[in-house]
Structure formats: C-alpha cells, structure tokens
Image (cartoon, rainbow, N blue to C red; front, side, top):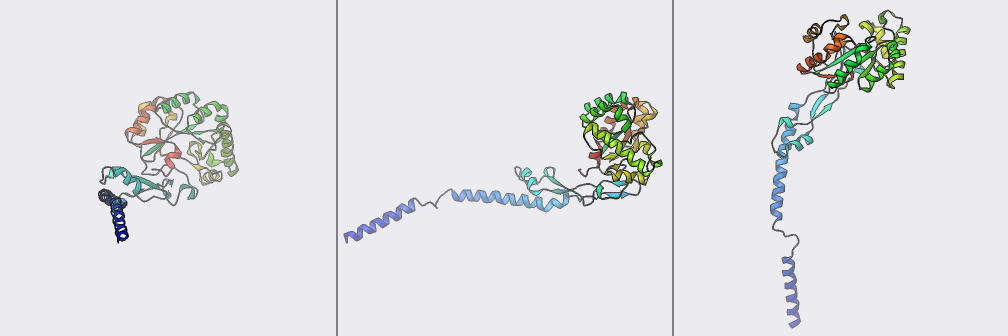
Length: 314
C-alpha cells in the first residue's frame, strides 16, 4: 500500500510539473497571433484594392505602323501596374495612393524592324520628346561651340556625317563620339541620292559606314540622305545595309544664315511630340542653339537622340 501511494504521488508530481512548464502554453501567443492576423487582413485589403484597380491605370502597348503621310512610325510600350511593388510603396500608409503606383512597361508586338522599307520622319506622335538632327558636310568651325552648349545643357544630339568630310576631320568626329552623341551616315560626298544607280547608292552609304566605323569603332544605324533627296530604292539600299532612312519634321533652314530670332520663330510654332528638328553647323545655329534648347524645354519636351526618340520606351 505504501508503494502504491508512492507511485500515485510521483504521477501527480509529474503531472503538475508538466502542466507548469507546458511548452505549448504561452499567454502572449494569443496577442501576437491577433496582431499578425490584423496585419495580414490589412495587407489583404490594400493588396486586393490595388489588384482590383490596376486595369484602370494600365495602358495597352501600341504597335509600330506606316502612316500615310509620316511613313514608318515607332510603336510605344504599354503600362501595367506592378501589384507587388505598388503595395510595398503604399503599405506604410496602409491606403491606396495613385501617385505611388509602380508600372512595368510592356513592349508592343510590332516594332519598326518588323515593317517594310519606308523612311522615318518622326517619333511616336504621343511621345513628349524632340530630337536634334545635325547634318554635317561643312561648318567644322562651329562644331566645338555647339558641342560645348550641348554639354552644358546636358543634351545629346544626332550628327549625320558625310564620309568625305569625316576623312578630313576625323578628330572632330572623335570629339562628337566621345561626348556620347549618336553618329549617323550622310552619304560620302553629298550626292543627289535619288538620281544615282542602285549600286552607287549602296557605295555611297557603305563607304561612309566604313570611314565612320574606322574612326569611332561603332556601326552607324541611321542614314540621312543629303538634302532629303530619296526614292524607294534609296530606302531599300539603306535597308540592305541594316539601316533606317531618317528625314525630319521641323527645318531651321539655318543654311541660309538667318538671324537667331528668325530661326527661333521659324521653329517655335512647329514643335510637336516626336519632332525631329533639322540643323547644320552654322553661325546661326551656334549662336541660337541654347535658346532653341530652352524653347523645346519650355514646351515641356525632353531632348534625346534619334535612338531615344524612336525607342518604344515611354
């Protein structure tokens, strides 16, 4: 009987000890669980709201196309709300805020490279960007000043350079390249491209490409026919060399050496989304370039190279 009582006491002692130090029992667990549940519920509500509203703010991509007047026209990326990143930016405040939405850019199905041969005059008509196109076959005395102004104003331009001129002014070509401007092809000796044979067209472009590549180590992608003279065969000749033919929508007519005010007024009413502004290294442009940059920016347009203007990036 005494042994039986000893075992009973031992059992009771073990039971009490187990209860006292029970691992699963924690008086704070309930509070933590409630807090965690509350946070999850808040996240779910905000997350769900972003998810439900995302289509209201998303924009479909636009394919590249050939316009009846403006020919090849670049496409434009669409916008899609990134739910996770948007939530991360809003979660601290815990409320939906349109200004904190984060977007992913969605490329269109059809790009410029998918279109048949056709010249390019402009960027996408809704893109708030403008590009300076500077055709060079003379005027080397004005280029250093133009480069200084572009650098001080943090503007990148596109220089279409004649092959023969590049041979004679390789140091200036290097200077342009070293300042990260885009260099394009302006034929070898400024011919009327539309009057050349098919073979001569290709030779004018390919010879200039070889010269520019030897100076910069880069392959030119863009071809600007001298004086804007082209026909379908000119475009096809450039395309056979993996190049696009570039024209313009706004002309400074700076080669006539107008006063700065006349040149600025000539451009003022013609700037538009996706505009390409043609100029040359002249005294008028060197003297008026800073004012022209200010004019573009006052109209809320960014300035970029032809690559940037024709990209699908927003």
